[in-house]
Length: 435
Image 1 (tube, rainbow, N blue to C red):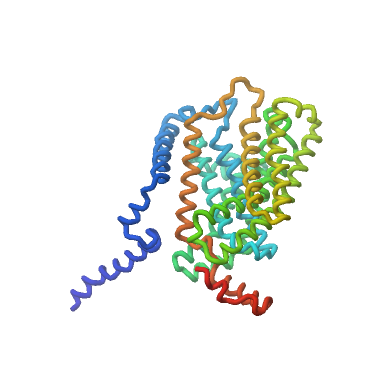
Image 2: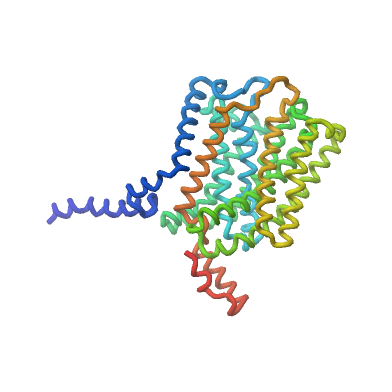
């Protein structure tokens, strides 16, 4: 009897582990069926792209940056930092913008999208660090700006510490969804209890490092074109990051309705349009502030005459086409309840901030140097591949974790409060219809 028990115990343990792995990692499917479902045209194309990028990364780390980039002493930054860091960080402002709105200012109407916003911020900052590691000549010394080479008066010291700390904060803010997925209720309650403190700390860090990225370019007044160089650069970077965070939530929420509707609950699906209109209205006010700062920066530098030049025309394309026009679109569409137009204006805003960061860090940086090569096909391939991995990581998480679903505890309290306030018009059965 004893021998029989000893032999069956591992089998019983394995029988527990197998279904757990099947449920959590394979989405309840057998391994063969799951692997067969992964073979799609998009996945195959992504795999080929990532394979080429991995080969190029091997060349980069064995032969140096010159093997895959056009970087030089005169043009030290390329697409890795321009796209991955300077453009990626404002796109990741979703977490601190929505987190502060919901948890600090009590805007509970936006709670359905806050977990998605925090996930976008977490992935954005993580992959910004990935791009930084790719670009660093000695990536294993990434901690040097934080503890060795620079003092607290250095902008690089501030950026390095802020990004590292905020990445940790974002992970802790998202951890309740991870613990809920794993069924660790006590750890989830512990993590939820840290929400307010983490949000306050995250807002402080985000305010500092979003502006510090702009402050870095204050050190290069002769290298950055006068139309983009301004003592207001820290403010410009910070305000534009807020607008981008709001608009990224709008854009990604629209995509989740299209591709992840089966992973969302009833409350999320029925709230996105209303939330989109509210975020669009807020974004229009922020964009108006950003536009005013852009005009003030030109006036402060007495650079009006430069607008009548090729660089000036390019500057106007950025400011008018991707700041002023989206501002008007978002304001009008939000007032008239046109959700589709709000999403289009949000997409233009996101594209405009990416264009601005590329202009500041790459296109208009060292603008007077002759024969500049801004990027190589190898750089473009690696950048697109890393963003593809980021999208696939987001898809993997959303398909498994309750990112587009309310916490059950929160949903219950909200339904009770709404029922007391609205009487018979709101019932628990209406919201309980969601998964």
